[in-house]
Length: 217
Image 1 (spheres, rainbow, N blue to C red):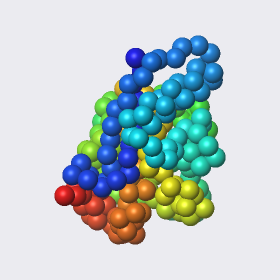
Image 2 (image 1 turned 90 degrees about the vertical axis):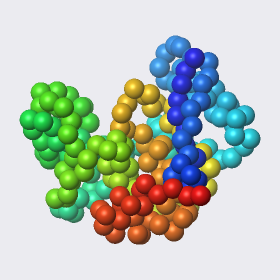
Image 3 (image 1 turned 30 degrees about the vertical axis):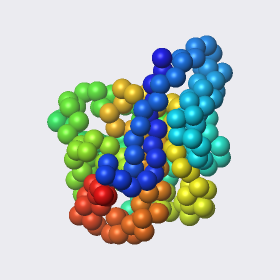
Image 4 (image 1 turned 135 degrees about the vertical axis):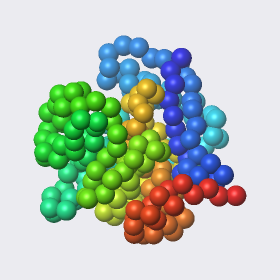
């Protein structure tokens, strides 16, 4: 059986979003074909579980909006005025026991960033450093979500379509990944927008930490 996470951008006792797991028959074969069939199967099972609702798939297999929200395509303008991909900024901000951050990575190609040996030679990941601020790895996906929320706020052209989503998925997400879930990040953005908290959450690092972990009765 295959296993994926999916997210409902709705505030609850769990927080700003509801995270769920879906199990479905695994599809094998040529990657592009099998991934499309996997997505179809996954969405069918989710729709049956959730009794409807509009689903946004955030991956290269999604619609135009979903593709635009993938980490190598979604961009955030840096302090230098240049727009970099969220994925590049995330990798460039990593701080290890014996090195980092490696800011030169943010302007490199994806294959260069992912193949950079410094990530493998500097010890354990300790946190992140971005725009003169330090971010911890607890909660483990917070910094990635922070970058995403900022980047999506700038993409006003996507807001109307994003707010239509009741469920957010990513068929390519690896369950072994400890940090990166674009679907989770997009769900946070939608929930913050609907709650009227988007401006406040980005006003300072203190406000982000406080609002990011809010729970609702």
